[in-house]
Image 1 (tube, rainbow, N blue to C red):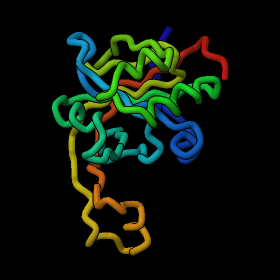
Image 2 (cartoon, one colour):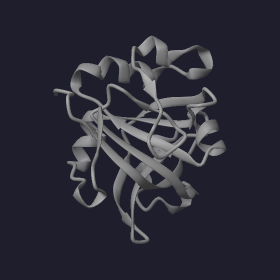
Image 3 (cartoon, helix red, strand yellow):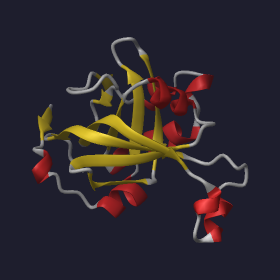
Length: 174
């Protein structure tokens, strides 16, 4: 059962969350059964424009890009280490090629605040509404080494999402 977390009480180890745990970014509409998910390891959490936010980046070549462009909301979910294999699969396979979510064994469920689904197995859920986007521009890289992340020149699009709801799984052991 997902328990609401007052946003003022949300406390995470941000670097650890992105770099070591990873997250599932899901965009689309659960009720319409029109959504996709992908594993993300780059992003941030914080406060912007006096609002709690999550920032994610998605390359235009990713299938999830089509969904995050088309829909106003997205979700971010974290999982205990026992789901690492599922997150690896969801980051490596494309939803264009089949039902990777079913293959992962994870269970999409309706979110509380947004159209995008969340996952029953998640230990932390952030439900977000897009409020800003910007394309990465290589001419803005101050450190030229950053461009080495883009041998195909497929620069990410950055999305800021206002966190509308945060929830934790009370009975999900790590």
